[in-house]
Amino acid sequence: MDLGTVGDILLPGSRADLPPGRADTAVLAGGTWLFSEKQDHLATLVDITALNWEPLTVNETGLSIAATCTIETLAQFESPWPAVALFPRCAAALLASFKIWKTATVGGNIALALPAGAMISLTAALDGVGQVWSGAGPEHDYRVAIDDLITGPHTNALRPGDVLRSIEIPRHALESRTAMRKLALSPLGRSAALVIGRVDAGGDFVLTISASTVRPFVLRFPTLPTSAELDDALADAIGPEHWYDDPHGAPDWRRHISCTAAQQIREELS
Image (cartoon, rainbow, N blue to C red; front, side, top):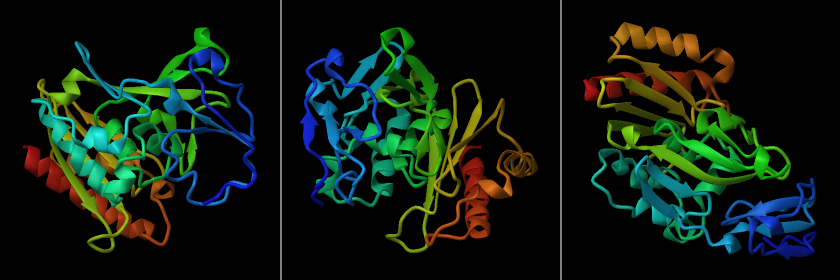
């Protein structure tokens, strides 16, 4: 969609070229959502793809995913790390065409903070940590866990002028065994629940509930829980107000399918 109120598109060559945060300014990466509907409050777009960040960087601590890394690039990443099998599966959970994969970015999907954001589900499930460039200057840069970065539907913890630089995935999570369930009202429907479990080398069990909730919930256990322990933990962590309600699924149904999927994942990883 044409954005008729936008008069300027900035192409920063370095961090110093990033403008101060303003209500009429938006960061542009892939733009697949930004250009999908009118944005009458915007006058300026800042295209951070001009910064030419390396999409994926493997290092001794794990994997660094640039915020501007396209979903296609991430989905096609190959590695002996077992958890990398989740990358294309989560990308497919977006139900986007191959054309969208080529343009949509990991950081954009996360910053948009939609409950069904599959890159949120993926990175939260793998202990992803966002590296944020603060609008107040480099001395105020900070790191935030992805499940803490997302605060609710379409809301996140970024402040005006902040830019999500990258998402760091630790090696221990990439080396874990994983299982995933994606559920919807129809076979090709938008995700109503996306549940991911993993077992780390030390035996820790981590379960992430998303899409069915207003934000991602990550539950951690020192060992594989019993069925009853898992049910109790889900009830304690996710209150009635946390189950999402929209045309893609009612809260009670979302809770039911999410808890059922959680038990299936527990059994699969046992």
